[in-house]
Each structure stands twice: as structure tokens, then as C-alpha cells.
Image (cartoon, rainbow, N blue to C red):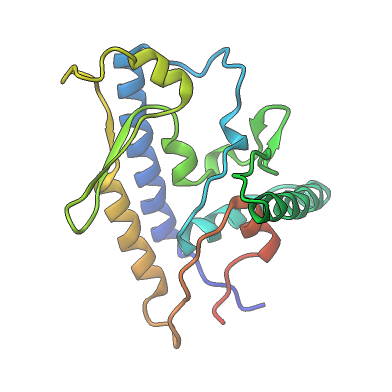
Length: 201
């Protein structure tokens, strides 16, 4: 299998993006006095979609660090998650299914988790290339924290725009020079696992 290469300098830049995002997240959480500690919910059952080959390849880099038996268990779970999600979507329902990387309430590939996983929780905004500004209210617990403060200009938020732009630049560098353009992807983590690592063909 001719896999899409993930050069170490690019990996380091991806880690820098993740680190900057975590710092922004932690600062907003600190200002809001918000924490996931003691939450009865688990965000890992949210239906998140992911869009970059670079994160897909990085996820597989992390998976391969696990023992083979554990990898197989995760991949088996991923196949079941994909099946359930497709069934739910076919019935017009948004899936609520635990991520196959979640074991006993924790992500087994936490250092390799994707950007969307890292941003969920606190309020965030993102400005699109056309100038439109998207707002994300955060998880339900964080919405409870800021309820009544919506009109307060002091409510902090994470601006994802710059870091997403840097991620897009990494994606372009990873894919440039390929003989044929890569199709756009729109996949869950389970689908990324079931399909295997991204390839050159």
C-alpha cells in the first residue's frame, strides 16, 4: 500500500497548531471558569465530521503505536460505528454513537485527536473566506455557564480562523505535487479508521 507520506517537519507544525488551539481553549475555559470535570455527558458520542488528509494520516500514525490486538479491537468497533451511523442517517436521524477510540470514557489516542475534537466545548467563532462569520455556542454545559451573558461583550470565545487557515496550508503542502488531485473528504473518525490510512492513489 503506497501511503500518503507525512513528513516529520509537517507533523511538528501540525502539533504547533494543536498546541496553540489548546492554549486558546484553556484561556477561554479559565475566563469562563468552565471545566469538563464531573460532566455526565461525553462529547465523544457527537457526530463530528473531519475534512483533512493531514489529520487522517496523523490519526493513523497514532493508531500504529498501539499493540496489534488493540488496533484490531478499535478497527472492529469502528466498523460497527460506521454501520450504526449509516443506519441512523438513512432514517433521517443525527447519530449519537460513541467514538471507537473511546475506552472507559477516555480517548486512547488523545495526543492524536483531531482539531474538531479539540475545539468542542467552549464558545468559538470562525470567519470564512467570503467574510461570513460562523459562531459555535459550545457544549450544553458551557451554554449553561454563559446563559444570560449572551449580550455581554465580555463573553470570551476561541477564534478558530487563523489556526484553520494554517491547517489548510499544511493540507495544501501535503497534497501538492501529487499526480492526481485528491477528492475532498468528509468523514467521521470511524470512517477514517475503516478506510485505512490515506494513500497516494
